[in-house]
Length: 570
Image (cartoon, rainbow, N blue to C red; front, top):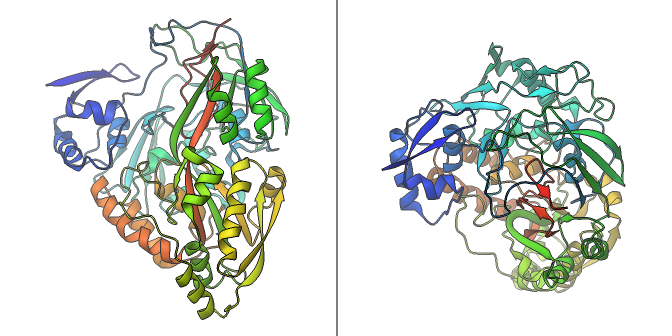
């Protein structure tokens, strides 16, 4: 018994029924091991053109990508009814609208939203964390995950003064820029561990082969990282001067720390299910409200804007009581880290770092900072229930006696005094930091808290010796760990450099099946808990809210502002 699904190009694929729950709906439950085994056994039954040749798949989500059932557009007859064309959607941005020039070097969600409407990605990860081909027609891997074949889609056109269709040379141009440390891109940290410039082979005008130095199972996800927007090969490095892309909107203006405006293209390549043009909206306007809770609440209730992403918990609770506002709560791998630079005393001593982990009262921190919009942190950056290969481990318990003993061993029998900086927004970071400082005082560590405007904190976030940093959602733990903890990675704010950790991370990244990756995580997670450079009290739910005039908006753990299939009522 099977179901037929149509991909973007209209090709039909046979799919066993067992895959419908696990793949089509994008839901991967790590506890359903027997069903996942059945999925892998059924892979060979699929009729497909671009399925992985391996007898097992990288993960259910990669199977989804290879089967090619990315949506071509909105589905007619959704719960919100038929689409309405026209109008402007105005939204409060997830993050500050930082100044930027190069999309590859963007390091904030707010600025990336301005890029996202104009320039697109090779893949697209949906609200269920399932990747789909986007600017790629297909993405195919060898059995050992070391050779990947990319086929560029026909149809997407760059909105340059002389418009032209995307081709393999454009993809290669971006790959090489991302791999160049001089670009200053976080894509470097994602790709460099397994891809070198000489591993990029142009096969023909639409086909590229990537010959990897190390196997990876995260390529489809890495291509959707928010610094991975595809620019044409003519791009010189200034997006505000050359806002070129294949996306559904044109950039009208970008005013740092204030707002940006996007206007719909009339020649966008994607169509909806009825073959009609996308996007539905005429215009999107994003406003920087500095993540201030009162502004979030007042703006939505008054109708000043239609939608807000990345809500504070107080905004979420207040808006939940408003009958005309729709709120959403999405489990994510977004996490708060009390992170320590390992090249700065006293944090160069792993015993000091462990003491600060052990002093955490997670229940207290979560209760006072976020309540039911957060769940326990684990000191290993692997969010339970988000990455399907998460290795189930007990949450670390507070142990004040051991923490004191470790400080004594490290030469601090009476504790020490230090300074910890944190961004004043979102508001939960300050509340959590205050509770953490109280926890630390119980082991003799006096933490002098230094709240900073968010833009000031993030302007030098890689420099602080001790800080409270928030990391946004990534669907695979290997992505987050690679960006933040690999030696030399652009976003390695703790200056962590540990060959054993990187060996374990490489091992997890090279696994084919979810079960094998779970085993690799089972070795990596305990090591990171013992040796990692941060205390991690919590993971958060991504919170969003919108007025009822907003239709067909799908909140995601990414908190991205993407509105190519959204419309508004009059």
